[in-house]
Image (cartoon, rainbow, N blue to C red; front, side):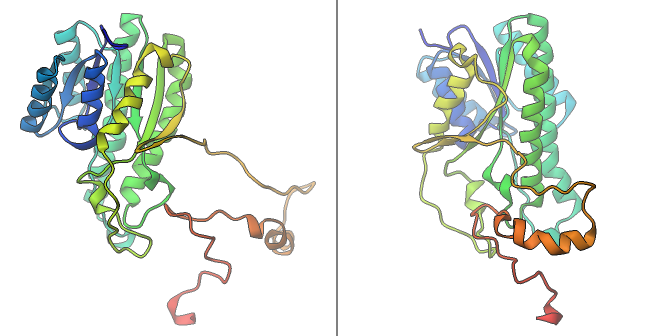
Length: 297
């Protein structure tokens, strides 16, 4: 009997990579799992793998970027297992393009799956959990790309939205016993293979077993973690790291407020050496010499 015995969960985007790992670990610890993926054959492979290990799982290929798909996914979990205890929002796509070349379709496609899909699956799951009266757990997926990453305006923006939704939902859903957290996972997948450095050149990263994130997801879905909500964790590999919430940092104050001449006088000497580095790799702040157009360099 595992710590998740008697619980049922849905995992989106679970046919491969990190999502597959979530399903394997949830099942390993006793949960029944609905394995969602737009590629039904890949979802069925995960179901078969879980079955061979003595677990219980069913496949689902609903499009979670639609309200109908989100409803179908949650309904299947309830139909198969009588209830839903956990929603793990993992599904995602990339449509990488530098900002000035990105199309509306590329932007909308990523937001539809990541931000809107997370919103709709979490909402449908939470509505059912509230009706059941037994609480539950929602675990969503963010990314270090949220810090800023070349060619990923759409992806980074969607992940930032999911982080902010996580904080909001934790406050709203606590009254129903529903916990809401997110992970920023690491793992070698088809999606991670698209990563580019600050210069836009592809970077070859070392292999990280994508299934290692699943242990922490299983923990967040268990009653052992009923004291954790509204948090984001960096997971995978050897790490479990707490991602700090956005917060006000250094500042300066002046009675009556700041005029433009005041700011010209005080900004650089007061806050100049405290400006935040920009981007995923957090290189030193690069703009002290000014951001100037090519014609003036």
